[in-house]
Length: 344
Image (cartoon, one colour):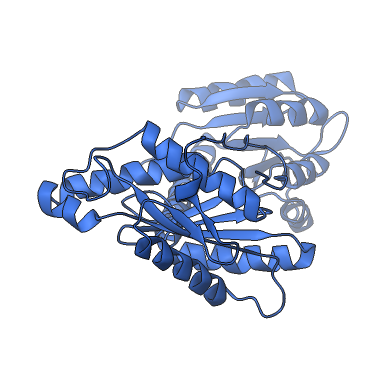
């Protein structure tokens, strides 16, 4: 197993013995930090974060046992090996050192061979610790990526259907507790099959990514949430947004799509890619479920398609954006705090 060069904090108040140990340690290729008291050593420990502490038991201010306990209390999750040095060689001294947080105990005068062997053993332990730490970080990263993939759409980077369902449950509960309105928008790309048939699936994917980018940009408040519901269909959740605020939002989204238009080679509606959408808003009560909101939004989406597409419809308020898109509204400003209600 590969060993590593150690940064060693040497705590010894006798200058001659400290110099002798320094020569031994540096001769083995290690970096040595010297301290002649417990308080100075504790300061160096925080500043230098050594790999190992060689610690005399008897020091002029506090004893080595006190210093070991301080190190163990303050080192955090990174374990630092501590080897005590002492002329005392009774079993009780060894027990006291281990109880204080030490990992080994060497009797003075220290044999160079024994010291080298102890350091090699500690090096192996440190290598294993570092490998375990890297493996733990790799596992944490893999778990994060897996969690992200479970709730996000790989193509667009938006949430996916599972993520939407989880967020719907969360937002309905929050809106119910606070008695605030929650708006849900379902929309899809008009005549997307024709787009795919003419340009191919790779261009179709780029089109979906473009639309997702426009939708994501429109969701400017921290809690606004957008997801790819499936195929060319998208869903948007707008918390604390009443019907007129939802209307202002979809009007702004329509104008944003037009300002960043992508040409459609075979649409019966426009030269460019357009959206049809359904909107529903409610202040949730105990009968409100994610399924009931999705059904209402889907019914409005179906009505938008039946009325000719390239529009957003809310059946509960009789809103139809095809009558209102001539004057582009501004999207509400983003907020870094809890979002205020969206209003027209």
